[in-house]
Amino acid sequence: MVDLVLSLDRQGHRGKITALSHRGLLPLAHRPTTALTLLSNEIPFGPELSQITRWLRRLSVEFMNQGGDWRSAVDALRPHTQRLWRSMSDVQKRRFLRHARAYWDILRHRMAPEVETQINTLRAAGHFEIVAARIINAEVKGDEVVVEIRKRGRDQVETHKFTKVIDCTGLAQDPYSSQNPLIRALLARGAARPDPLGIGLDISEDYGLIDRSSQCSRRVLAIGPLARAAFWECTAIPDIRLQCGHIAQIVATKLAP
Image (cartoon, rainbow, N blue to C red; front, side, top):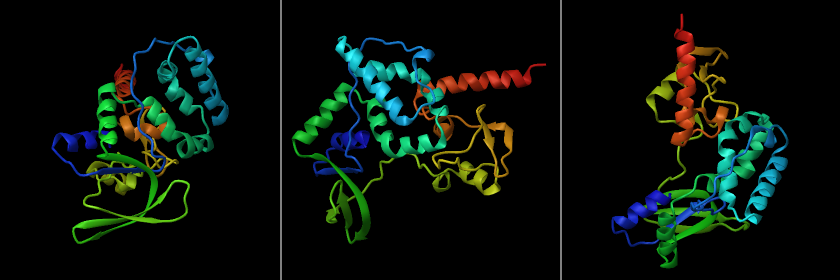
């Protein structure tokens, strides 16, 4: 969404841009930080999501009281996020996706300070606004899109008219809604299946694709966003690079005499 707003501005668009999201949040910005290292034995693997959240908040506050920045605490957790995710039960994972994901995303996936300045300038000038709301219905009428929304914390439905509506929600979570021909073919043949959370493909801990009959493929491996149900943090290049390293080791082991 941020990229699209800045792209429209660069192209000379001067109409008002309205961004709708359930919570109306924006990614926070990067700041210069002091590196903080967390060891595995310092991280609470396995407890309830509420306990993990309190632990991370406490860690952030302690570091800020020492003159540091909360970003350092979040960054220090990064090497351990995949293990932390895998230590959660399916119930905990669903709770995270429903209640905590949006807040984790704005803390973890931050924007550059220059981008923050541009966004704030557009907001101050009235060219861009963020509204916490859900879309109830959208219908094309002539040259307009009539959108019904319900703002967060309110019961009444409001009707607004827009010239264009653009979906900026990112990759489709449900694999069955994917437009990728390969994914669609794998699902249609039963060579792949959605994961239990419905946010990617079902894969094993060594990246093997699990088919409709629960058999793990020894030939087809999945990395990146398709593997997020198994590892969660696997959309940024550093995370994907680590996955590629793991897969290279797996393949080398299988090919070894």
